Length: 156
Image 1: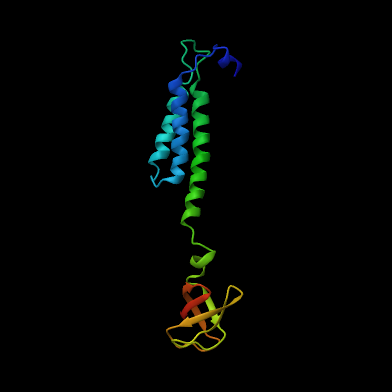
Image 2: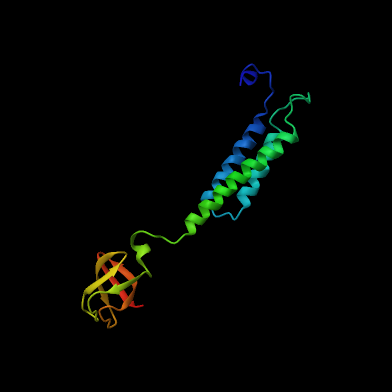
């Protein structure tokens, strides 16, 4: 930092901007469905920005490939690994709320018939339930809908 502040290191603003663009593209890969194109652009931008970072004719002050390639690959692999985890989390089936209840299996505690409300046990809880089929007490049911605190079920 001191060398930069004292203007001993000739830092290229284009290199810094390319590095920032590369990081922004890698972060946007998580939020936008680009199927990897933003990640490829981000990695390329990081690589070329790192190569252009120090603008000096002296080879001692330039950033070498021995540093740029491992740092770019390590940073890219970490971010792409995190992107993979984020994509898996976004595609996972919900486990809470109304969406988590759909297609779950329960057991009828009371008989159910069209227009008649009964009781169903699922997730360790007892719910009010309706069905458009005749379901006997003790039968297995599948949840097809949630309306407030009443489940809609069918034989399952």
